[in-house]
Image 1: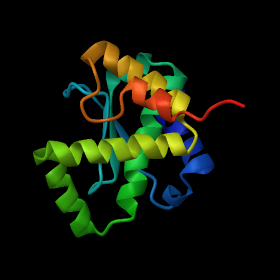
Image 2 (image 1 turned 180 degrees about the vertical axis):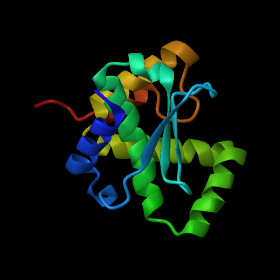
Image 3 (image 1 turned 90 degrees about the horizontal axis):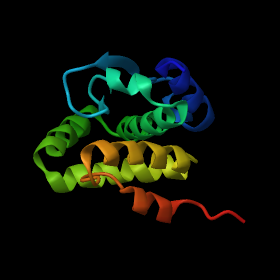
Image 4 (image 1 turned 60 degrees about the vertical axis):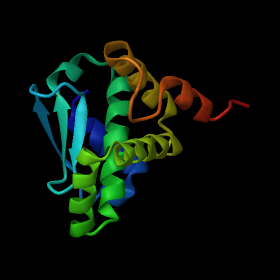
Length: 145
């Protein structure tokens, strides 16, 4: 499934606040990571190697990035600029922002998808340094009745 189609579906179902401010998607090959969100430009960059991911993994990745977009949409431009700078220079701030995005994606119903994506990340890069680990996501997953 194409990224734009997934984003449209996610926004329609769970990220309603982004309907009027839908992030643009672009693909890249330069950076090591899988994806990032740039709040000032309102764009999501996705590494071309993610094309091989399953739809479930892509949904987990995009739900996380849309969580960043939703959080950013609640801030003024000056706050976004300040937070963006702190994100890159403060590991503590980066960890906090990434954990918040993971928790928001889980809260919106994307726990299984987030777990699938995190497992891919941990397989390639090792334990999650900034977001929630697979173990932490499992602990936050809703219990089946």
